[in-house]
Image (cartoon, rainbow, N blue to C red; front, side, top):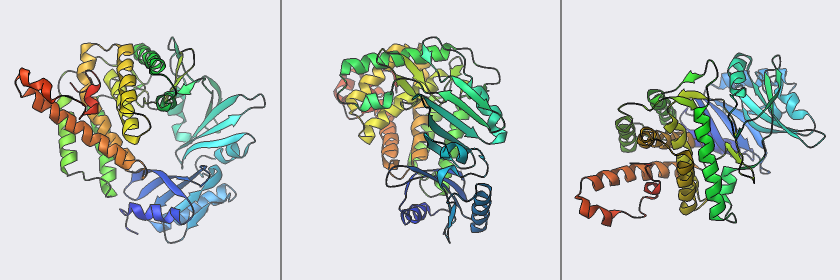
Length: 408
């Protein structure tokens, strides 16, 4: 099998009655696989272009984890690692096997999350990482206290086992509230206002020591790396017109003075935010926490709302309502607002590349990118016309334009 034959990987796992939910590229010759059984449960796997390496990984993992169903699919380079079997995350299989435990996420030989239910019904999430990554996980698990924002409380650190355990936060995911058509618009608006205010408080927090910096150049570099991965597997065209237009727009819009840096989540979206019935907001997963421009977090969150509309998870009207209220609750200053447009483009570009490795969602993310680029082009055409002719050309053709100040 060619290293760039991504559909063949999907076909191979399908023959095992598995569906590829998503893949994470580790290079042009190696993919981490998130697979799903018919019942929705998770199976981790890896694909290697080098079949000899695949055999070595399968053998080593099977030996260190006392088999546990580790299997190499012959002549495919695909290794299946069910039940948390992992030669690098050596405590993972034991955590998964414990009563009341379930595997939430597993990136083979990188990290995993296990949900555990205690005898009293409490829920704990335990994250396992490689030994050489524990030093990165600990600061992320010890985010600064943010007044009015709930953060997962660390209740246990096992340095020998390379795990950190946190209590579950109360509330419903913003993602679920957004998609709940029974939730009145007024309730969604008040929820989003609370979310916006919580993000503002996050950005006012004092970053922990050793927090990394991530500026516009770093965000562009990250986005370009994702596109290079997608191009290597022939999923996107790095030299095509969409990539050229998108990266040119991002560079142009991010040229100029940056807004003052703040503490960032850096992976802020609707599945990282919980809101209780009383309006208290909680935030999850600070693994990528950084210091950088606040517009990065805001753009990432707003573009994810648009993505949910494109995916059919909610209506465009609900996405707009939520997005406007988040901005109202945050109340960005002019410098932050000015930078939203550029970071929205990098987010769209990045999501198009990330989702190209998710067969069930790739088209929606690509459509979101082209919609955004079309909107930018539309605005450019508007500005080039006399003011008394501009209004007649506005409307619902470009839903992204309805976020006030979002692409201005």
